[in-house]
Amino acid sequence: MTKPKTDKGKKMDKVLNETPAQSPSESAEQAAAASGTSYGVDAEPVQNMSKTMTDRFDLLEASLASTQATLVSLGNRITEVENAAADYDRRLSLVEQKWLKIQSENISLREKLVDLEARSRRQNIRIVGLPEKIENGRPTEFLTEFIPDLLGASNFSKPLEVDRAHRLGRQSPGENARPRVMIARIHHFKMKEKILVLARQQFPLRYKDRPIYIFPDLPAEIMKRRQAFEDVRKQLRNAGVRNGFIYPARLRVSHGTTDKVFSSPEEAESFIGTLSQNS
Image (cartoon, rainbow, N blue to C red; front, side, top):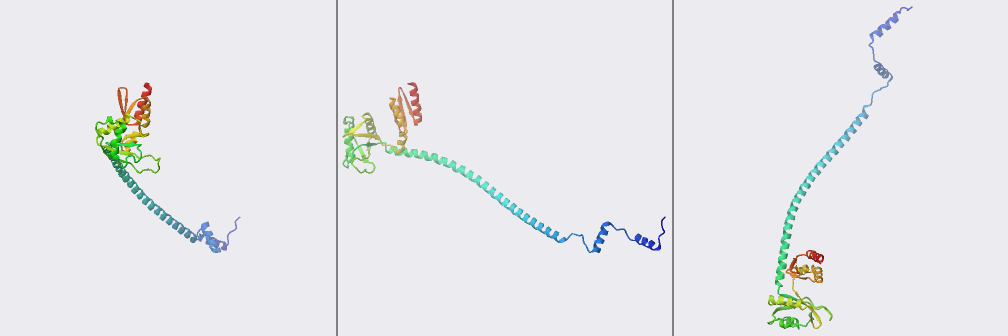
């Protein structure tokens, strides 16, 4: 059985009813405030961290901006290099075309030069093996008598005319030194050709127990071309096939009733192969 409240108890209930209700957190804060304790976060460390992050982002943005500017500059330079390379290719192509034209003209001019040099020598002969000083300082007069004596005076219906003659290079020291070659210009081209034919027909020639050789006087370039046929000509001679040169350096081969003309040793070697197969 409940006891009736006293006057003091009734007053306490009235005070409680008039006081507004508080949440547990508000009660805790009030209790903490009463005890002098605070549960709030300190703002200064957060502000420092925020500033640090902001500075770092600023540095990163500046670095990215610099990198972007560098990439743009490199891109521009690459574009310039590509354009320059394209221009160089175009110019190089033009240079190559001009070079090919100049090369073709140079080859043509060299051929003409060699032909002119050969024509200026077409009346010359080269005499190899004549002892030194045998001409006694008068090579022209000496050859007018020496050549008919060597090849047979009966082969010359009239006196031989030699325009000029001289030896090539300097005399080598020593008694056993090889004598220098003598160059002679025959006045008439037909007589020069006759001398070469007689020299081939009477090969080997000798004078005072010395071998004498008479050749046409040709430019060095034509001689090199002819020397390239030496092995082929040796094979033809061994096979008993007549052969000779057509100016400037084409090999003429007479076999049976047919004549062949070859411009290169390879062509002549192929022909020799067909001869061996037929035999």
